[in-house]
Length: 247
Image: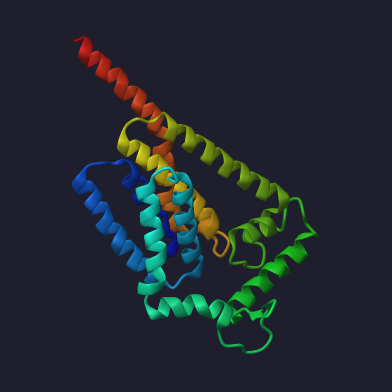
């Protein structure tokens, strides 16, 4: 649920950055506010990480727009102040939670039991991966690892991780070309939002099997298909407009 909300927030952000129609912007801000509240309620640390990466991505792409950067800095400053206590506790317990014994330590900081067990599962997969490094152990034929990249390399080996990287590269390149070719604010905002969402989902995949979760991938691939079609739709619209002008 958290990844789904972060992806929708990315789409809303892209539209907010380009659509200048007042009522639409207000509606997007209201929806975004509700989505942020719901996101906090998920208590999903992977989703919080994806949300943080989304904020950084927006800042890096909009650094020439002082008002946008100011709003981002304001949001970052206010989140620790107004976040509910259970959200703060969820984040803090990762590094300062109760220690039961056997937790992994990073320097003097002991990770919580949940994070420790997750890292141990990653280590188990990666240790066993060397026995089938090229093709892995097969889809669904291997130990569960709650991280997209560890799961890919365990099940499909180097071939799988290279194929996944190629798919992501092509998605990014085609979506960027679509973004640069658009002049319509809504189309440009949708493409921009998808690019931001792709970055956020790659971050989300560090702690979740993001790219096989249906509730995330349904809107993700729907938006991907729309973004890929934007240049074709724009070209058809221009042809239709010229035909109308000619008649």
